[in-house]
Amino acid sequence: MATKTLAQMKPNDEGIIVALRGTGNIKHRLIDMGLVPGTKVRVMKFAPLGDPVEIKVKNFDLALRVSEAATIDVEAD
Image (cartoon, rainbow, N blue to C red):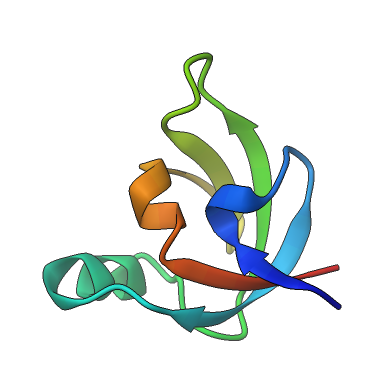
């Protein structure tokens, strides 16, 4: 399986989070929202101008900036 960032995935792609590369408050905020290694995520859609990206994680929808999504490494299915 290929590892890529959440920002590189396309709509309807799914994968498992393998690492968070962010630092400081951003990393803690992502962890608080449930984005931890081993969690399954699915890219729902990108906004018309490409930012933000909407994902589904733990049965809820979440919008992230593309810069935040780029710090999340995912093993794609």
